[in-house]
Image (cartoon, rainbow, N blue to C red; front, side, top):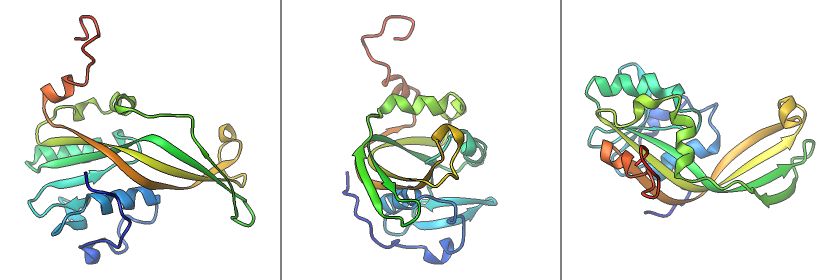
Length: 199
């Protein structure tokens, strides 16, 4: 597992400039930076779709920090055309919550979120994109991360969030990685202590 160090993008700057970057939180761009290897290209158009990373060996890498159903059709369509696709999904096992003053943007507080993610959080998303499980030509990679979420209570957020708006999500550390590309690998997630028919 390589350490996460925020640096400039390593390659493919000419492909990514001005494409699909404006609505991203920092987390998405930082994960692409973390995953990039020499020879990879950023934000490349493939079959009319913008791909986050295209590996030197031809593998297509899609980083999804939001809902998995949003990229289901895109990923399955590319896989069905014979492309090797890797879906990378981060799960926060630890999250630092930062709050900014809505007027001055001064940092008011920092605390640790009581929520602790684990590998099974993945299935909260996969219930709406089950076709991605063990699909041909698709590798699913889960990155367990330490992240930071910055919020401000400027009134522009939803009623349920008491007006809080998320300003940014950032990567602090990648802790571990778990990849799944076969039926047996997916089934191995099921704890052995579970009774039949679950195991």
